Image 1: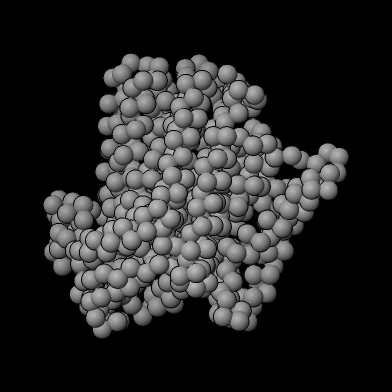
Image 2: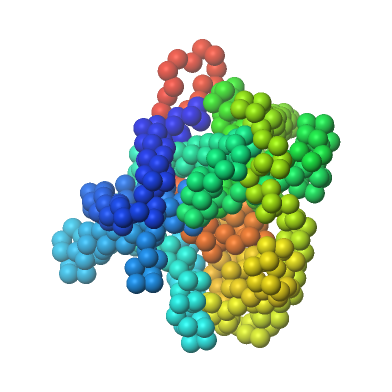
Length: 543
């Protein structure tokens, strides 16, 4: 049963910890207790990592996956912004250095030695070199502040060192999956709750909540007036007369919602592999509906495109490695599509439920500021940016122009025009992800990600062919495919969330297949009605 892989003690501990942190941050932000609170988080993270490096990594991935831009808590120290993500990084890396790196450097007996694995480590080494060169060029051309601010997300690469220092056994891998499940539950629930609150409370009542999610950079919330221009979901709601013209709802976009995609691909993969001869549980359908609901509320075209390509890859692999008749794939696909329709119905219920009564559009939050803001202007601005980006790339195509390099383009976004008083807008935070990498790190940066993608797919393909937990490998790898596709239009590969997920998949793949083996214990589902207790099946990764 899939629930046994994802739901355990760690799952609910993670949900509780995230909820507590958000509640405390809600009251602590911009108060005198925010800095002491950051110190406490750092001390507790250091102590946890000192005791168990694996537990420290659970904290790391939890914060990266749900923390958005990492500013749930942040304080200004002499003009420098110290965030909770930075504090956790310093605490974990310090504990790792003391417990692992220092003993190895002084040659103590029994110290852990990190073994180089070509397919696992080479892409990260090349990427680290590309980032270093990009930062040096950016420092010389654009100054330290801009280049560091543009580059600092890549510091996530350093987590590879503690990750490969852990002895990954059955329990540790399962705890990672439970941690992921806890993050998925929180992101889904938080998205749906925000959608409900913003469509049922007036602007005055929502002021404090909106200020919190905006300043902590957890979410972007924008008013969507139904006019058949808000995207696929808008068109469907009006096509079936579920909403009327000039009705409204809210787009709830979070950077963390990318992690919903691996959650969906894992459930889809399990549906086509793990359960092909068994019945699916209600928990699986509920989880799938919640994840899709939250993803649709993001109104992210990049996410939807990435998920679509990932889904196609899952179905293709299922055709080659399925154990049952091929006819089961269309049946399961129809079931997943029906679940997607249920997600749309759930969105309608969240928006239209009459308790409490919805305010009029004129009383809705952001009515005055959002009435003139259209998605078509944002799309046009993005295409205008592409031309300017290519001109910048052609100037230094080999080594790149360095981090902090600004690109000027014509923006048609009314918000930018209002703020800056002109159509020309300059920034180094760019939407076209692969162009951004080429501009700032040159061909070496692109090569690093090509190496990663090629190596992870090669090792993943070997894992799928030779081991019985195909659904897990396929689900995780299709998440990588979705990440690389979505990055074309929205920067995620160079964001801690994208880099974090690229690291997250490593313990579940067989990189050292020629010289070592490891076991992954999975719960075998009931395949026949007469089965009694579920059995535990040891899966040994060995050539």
